[in-house]
Image (cartoon, one colour):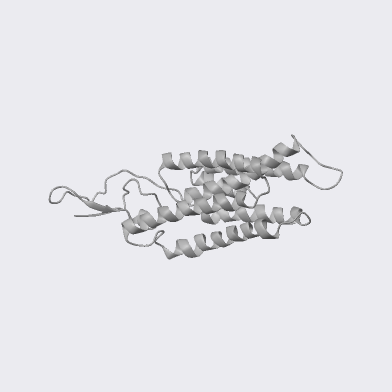
Length: 228
């Protein structure tokens, strides 16, 4: 269930995100192999270590996906990734099964995402992402899947149904990544052939790919439209 998100992240050049998804896939697989009821279990290391890494990987997967959606500057994004890893590790040591271990980071990451998108929308004077296709076919389905996973984890999962609900939780979170992870940011610094200096030499360039929400804000592409 984790291979598609890893492949998608690598294809979109989200290397750090792919590393987090791979970490989650590895430890979740062996944690549940060690956590099975019955006599036959397979534990490659101490059960407590496997459980901690599984929980940390799951929460970090949510964290890095939402932060990636905000399309922040690389330095800011990496700092948030590092802070998230340290704070989530501390929270899991304090209370591994606490509800706010999931809701707290999720709400904080959503706040960062909302702020980044609001600032971008105000600067561009239109909604971001600007295309209805992105909202209809990716963001809305992905949000519904991720929201369902969080609700199951927070309000449905019990000791009796743990093995079933927790497996569904993993499948939903992994599936939501395919919808929520933004497309690869394409940068091409070539100057458009039709561009020419006007007036004092300054131009306002509108990147069509960026306006469609398909690339980041950096760099002009061949399809840019420049006007005085």
